[in-house]
Amino acid sequence: MGRSQLSQYAALQCSTSLNTERRVCEWPGCDSDGEYRAPRSRSELRQFRWFCLGHVRTYNQSWNFFSGLNEAQIEEIRRRDTVWDRPSWPLGAGPSVNRFEDPLGLFGTMGKARPHTPRDAALAQLGLDQFASIENIKARYKSLAKKHHPDANGGSKNAEKKFVAIQEAYNLLINDAVA
Ligand SMILES: [Zn+2]
Image 1 (cartoon, rainbow, N blue to C red):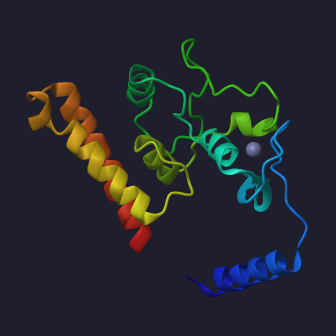
Image 2: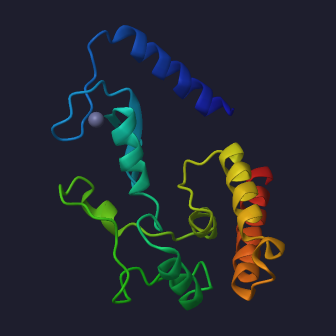
């Protein structure tokens, strides 16, 4: 944990213990305790919304580019754009690609969020959001690699491709983490 994270942590602890008022989940219509925080938007990563556990999960899932897409759609996007860091990720460019739904308009322009770094794309490849810890990444990699291992899929070419993609994403994230 770096110095700035430490002091943030300390500040958080402090404000939590001073604040005796009950925090309510910000999800419209929900009055559970808002005990879990999530960044307000991609451009305001240090501003938080507070939700109950169920709603923070829903909220966080909306950050995941691939969330709500089926395997075929994901594969389609991946084939169409294998160069990860090109400036215009074709999100919404294809007719069959739906973004997550945001009927309440809760997320504003966040709905247009897209992975724009190799790290974002690698996380998306593993079905993780940007808050995934190294442990999350390792665990997800382990289960995906097992599931898509060519040996477990009768040597299927598709499984092999998927397996390689998972491998690449994992390597990138691990190298990123130790760099
Ligand atoms: Zn809630």
